[in-house]
Length: 58
Image (cartoon, rainbow, N blue to C red; front, side, top):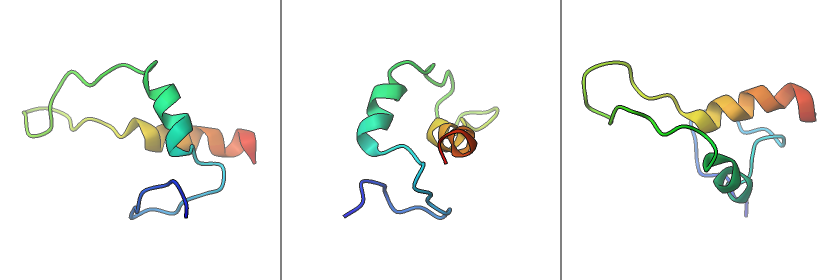
């Protein structure tokens, strides 16, 4: 079974596995705002990382 969680977007073979994401996530900034507070909704950094890696590792 795949390590990726069920999503509403297409999953690519170049996407980070859960194990790799846990390593990378430690080095990324934490969102300053909590969900539900006023202001911009926090971005899903895993989606951004997966999208930026698609062209490099395929």
